[in-house]
Image (cartoon, rainbow, N blue to C red; front, top):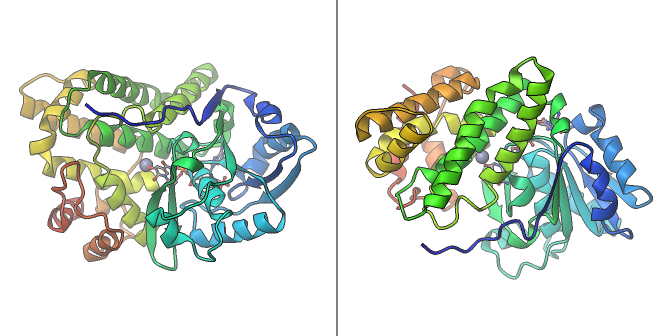
Length: 388
Ligand code: NZQ
Ligand code: ZN
């Protein structure tokens, strides 16, 4: 096993109720702060007030309107304002979209090009990004302590991941009480997204990594047992569930469980294409694909699927039976979280499989899968299965 990863030595995690106040010491006193946020939820739930209170006398340049699945054009507009106002620190306050945008903005703002998309993709001569930090209000993506920004480019019709290690947030504040204002749909999406993050680092060709696999199984158990508790009416239980889900979603994609193991991000790449084409919520783009992909990749994934079935779903039987059972249970969990598993669940969408293939080709992502076996032909089969 070889490993090369950064485990939170760049992102300081500050977790707990009231911890937004820590911004007072985490952000440099002399900083000019761009406060990046989304469509306004932080104005309604008191997070904006808590953030500006903690920032005290520092100069704050607010930029709102970052959309879900953040668009490149919005980030370029934020970069222009940040340069005009001599911003020295970017603070993303919101869900994965805002935090992805904040990290990307930190990289864009220091670049001379008017259109740095290609340079950031190619990672050629990218200068050191501006310092940035995150205040998370929606647990799902793990964006708050990883180096990835998933950015949509509506002009080019693309949604692509950019991994910019130096843009990893310096700190991430995770206050689970900020989740109280989240709509049911976003909570469900978050649980499902985090679950797929674990699965895409776990259901791959097995290697000698019992630590990572055992850790992944714990994360999966927590998501499966505590996810539904978010919707219970008992307030004390709900508060515990918020803490557990916010923590588990962070750990699902901070680099640890993916180190030293094969990773297969094919569900995510196909899902990004579906969101670019049809605007489907990120989590729902994944649940439409994953069960069908797992069935079609059973030969390579059977060993880990069976381990998943036995250890997490507590299924019994021979390897093939348990592997199938694990897919069925996962599918049922996605449905419990009110996420679609077939395109017939979303009748308003008329799927163009070839457009998805074109997105993957243009993104340079084919073939997919941990061993490069998921080519265009197999993606067609998987999407046709999802359309039955
Ligand atoms: O924009 P506002 O008004 O804040 O409302 C948001 C948005 O409408 C709302 N929301 C967030 N926190 C809230 C809240 N509403 C009430 N109370 C709160 N506390 O939720 C809506 C969705 O927010 P968004 O940030 O879009 O959701 P999520 O966190 O699921 O992020 C999705 C984005 O992250 C990318 C996805 O592709 C998608 O673009 N991903 C990023 C990853 C990464 N950086 O590693 C990995 C993921 O796989 C994913 O691809
Ligand atoms: Zn995801």
